[in-house]
Length: 140
Image (cartoon, rainbow, N blue to C red; front, side, top):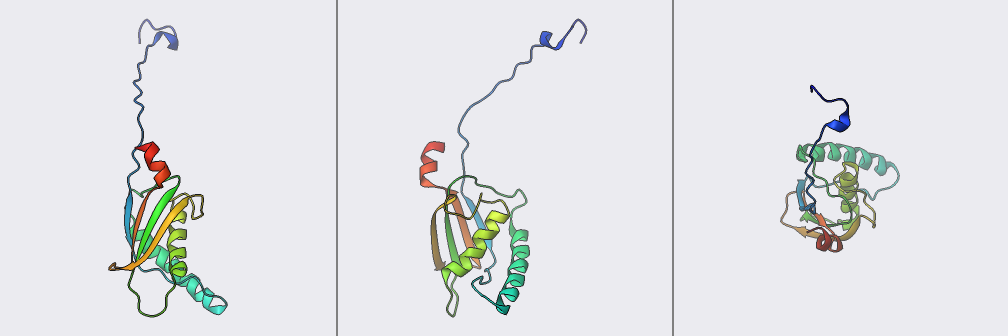
C-alpha cells in the first residue's frame, strides 16, 4: 500500500443487492410426542418422557437447523392413534419443542397465526411450517 497516507485514500467498492428474502416452508418428521396434560405424580413421569422425546426429536432435526422467524402457519399431522388422545395434549409438546430449538420464534398466538391439526397416515408427527399468509404476500 505504497503511496497511501490514510484510509480515506483507499477506494473500496461494495455492491449491495437488495431483494426480498424468500421464506421457504420447513418440513420435519418427528417421533410421536408424549402427552403433557397430566397432573400429580403422573406429571413427573410425563416430564421425563417429554425430555427423552426432545432428545430423540433433536437428533432428527437437520444439521443446518431450519428457522422461520415471524408469524407462521403450522400443519401437524399425527399418526393415527388407538385410544383416546386429545390434539391439545400432543400438539403442546411439539410446539414447545419447535420454539425451544429455535425453529420458530415462540409458541404463542403472536407467532403461530394459524394451526391445522390432523390424524393421518404419518409415522410419528409430520410438521409443515410456512410463513403466515399476511407475510407471504409481502416477502415473495
